[in-house]
Image 1 (cartoon, rainbow, N blue to C red):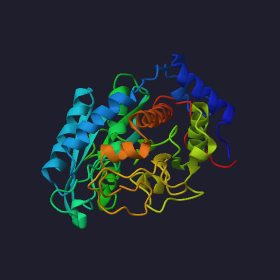
Image 2: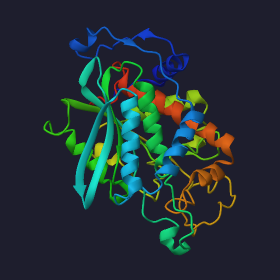
Image 3: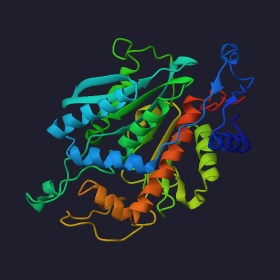
Image 4: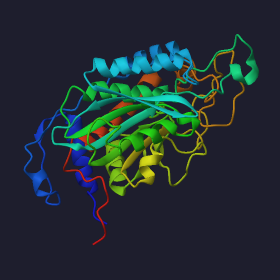
Length: 363
């Protein structure tokens, strides 16, 4: 199996952290058309976790019940759409029906090098209906904001979209807030199919280069809570593993999904992974080490199930996220780790034609 060496992976990471502008050096394995493209890799954007968390808190508290086409569900769609439009991205709102009327909300950035090759970035904005009120806690109980599941992944996606909208990308990127994940990965499945249908998706799709998914991500190093990473293509794993080492994330805080799969199952990336498209999936893992900060949640709170995030699908709020992280300062530091790793990964997928994401066939 031919793939990029760890030395090259780390070299790319160092270049990314330095934020320098450099002429991309294309390997001999790329086709002649790509070799002749005059492409300069832009300086990487920075996404500030403090700002991200402020925007996230406004979103999940304003639109806390994002299910069943409730007012909050519909309002969330419009709020995400406004963020993409304000960033100058092309808005693509894909309405579909699967049990109920649903809608994926996406922002599109066309690439300047290979616009027909796409990178998909996403997180789901819908919430489960299983919250503390539904669990019999009474009319005055706190209703889940879906703050971590998956307001975190939604807003990481939104902030990455805003940051990358300011620079050129070699490949086209579609940033998607998926609907219907809690109903069985319905929104991501609809988008996967839409991108294969020229009568639905607004641009030509020659190929999908890769997919990056965030679900319950941000309560991570320097918080003692590991990142669980799933992927398709060994090249993707080597790349991201090199970045996390460069960032100083310890080995035991970055776990391979294949070594210890989470009981909660997979997420929206599954459609692309099954199609053998390079994928990178990030999620926090509490199953192996337990609750990092065992402090009671704010009251009132529903029953605490034995799951990775004790308030998951119950009273999942900004407050419970903060409790789990060990305070607002640690929450911000953990999300900064998530954002920095997301920027590096997306840059590798979308800005670097010299990086081979797919595993080369055996000789």
